[in-house]
Image 1 (cartoon, rainbow, N blue to C red):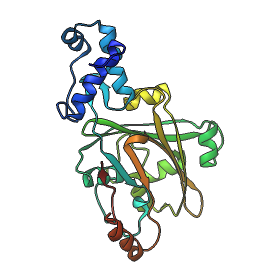
Image 2 (cartoon, rainbow, N blue to C red; image 1 turned 45 degrees about the vertical axis):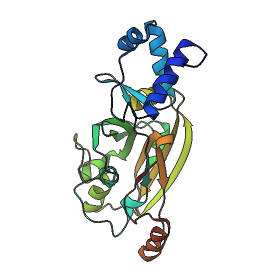
Image 3 (cartoon, rainbow, N blue to C red; image 1 turned 90 degrees about the horizontal axis):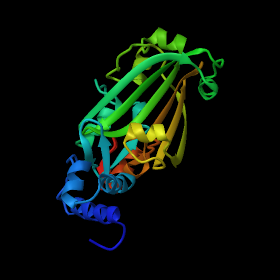
Length: 269
């Protein structure tokens, strides 16, 4: 190992082993205790070495599984796909479609609750502050790896009228549910921000505090009202957002030229 603090030297060794393929995506690294015993160092030194790799987004920690090697692929999400007029009917939402197109296994942790609208949510939805809104929260995983954190807010009356106030996930996605119940979204405003992760976001996504995230806010509306506001947060180094605008024929020309099909996102190195 090279010169430097012991924990940096251990991190260097583990990093090289990951790059050499000894540890593959999804593999569990030795626990802090196992690593400390093997390297004959203190538990604190072993923990600091692992934290270096967490900070570099090479690994993440899962409470029940230990330290896991991250997949290094970049997932491309075509964020206009879900509003395509020619989008085929499917029992899966857009996240599952993108994940399956990338040959990844998607899963989710879902929750829903009514809550008072804070200042930002009230502004986005055009409702009075402290009025009740529905918050639908989804933590999304690829191959069991934390991938993104999405919270969508809906006016209470609209949520109740369309059945999206369900305490369960909606397999086809709320965009399709709204459309099927007569509230199809016809316009969107998207805001993208790259910023450091807060402590709460770092915990949910399994990254170090300060890791750069993509914070994607989408406000949807029809001709009568704002229908929702969705915040989608993901790790910037592992995600790429693309927009496809225009008619199908023109998008097909672009896709054939750059070797990307007109459809769900893809994964690439």
